[in-house]
Length: 287
Ligand SMILES: C[S@@+](CC[C@H](N)C(=O)[O-])C[C@H]1O[C@@H](n2cnc3c(N)ncnc32)[C@H](O)[C@@H]1O
Image (cartoon, rainbow, N blue to C red; front, side):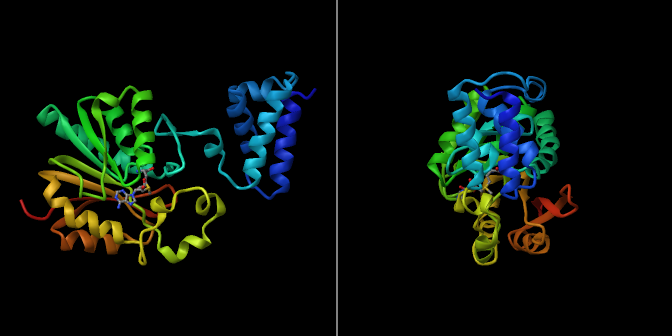
């Protein structure tokens, strides 16, 4: 019979031998997640004996990681902006950089609720629901629509809304960008696919093989989604509203030009933790 300490050490050795850089951290995360233990327990209960079926579950999880499946996909959920979000086959795994979009838009949502008593938010390409659910959590007087082209993603986003007790204020709508959307919103947010199609084969296997293509592929120049979103935004954004988008590190000028051509000016630009341009916020260029 093996112990908790021995199985963590074995997982770490296998991941390290496969060249995975964060082998020690990932081994602990996997074991803790699979056995539903806290990180502290994994550290301190090394002598705890493991049942055969527990050891088998850990071994299956390690085997998946060795095939480059990301840790949180194996575990089925990940943390985003303090929320535990379920993942599924057609949802992007939410990234820490996207929290910058939430932190940028939350004060704008608050400004609307302070003056109007409520705010309506639209999240285009909602995936797990990450951005909208984080904003709804921050701002109890807000409600919103999370739209996506993927039914699987919308089902997962709805499950996340229920788990977080935000489903009364969250509506999932299947839509190709604005095509199936009705109404006018105070705030529009989107983290659309923005990677150039030709670059996708060069991405890390964790991304290329496990994040859905529809969440990554921004067309030949990576900008297709911004063109669609900018072209439709004026019809769905309140006169004094804001639209915030996540962008690729080298897309600021191009995205500013796309929104300018659609009648929007840049209101805010934010960089990510690596110092790259990451979030742009626009408002109308006319009153
Ligand atoms: C980069 S992912 C972002 C997911 C989530 N908002 C997040 O930040 O974690 C882009 C999302 O856009 C969706 N999407 C792709 N093409 C779309 C389209 N034409 N209309 C609506 N959503 C689309 C994808 O299914 C995916 O969920």
